Length: 61
Image 1 (cartoon, rainbow, N blue to C red):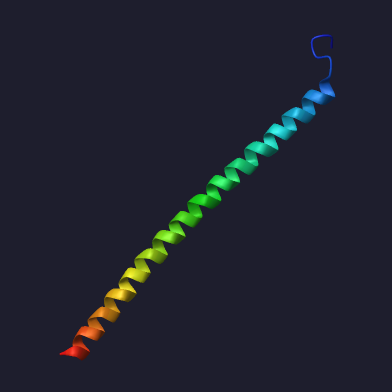
Image 2: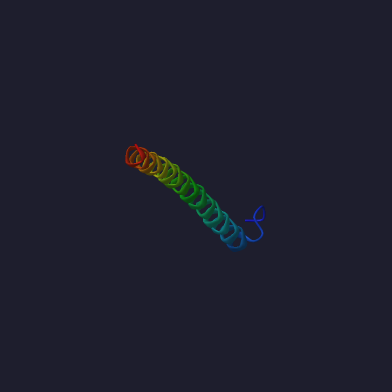
């Protein structure tokens, strides 16, 4: 017990570090999800604009 003078304090620090690690991982995961959604939206918008361009071109002929 002499080697660990404040076991309760060390336990609290360990739990706090675990919470920080979990929050950081959740944020990384959330960022990755948003990046995938953004890329999907970008692709769909490009397809929609291309379709509208094709319609406008046909109407102009």
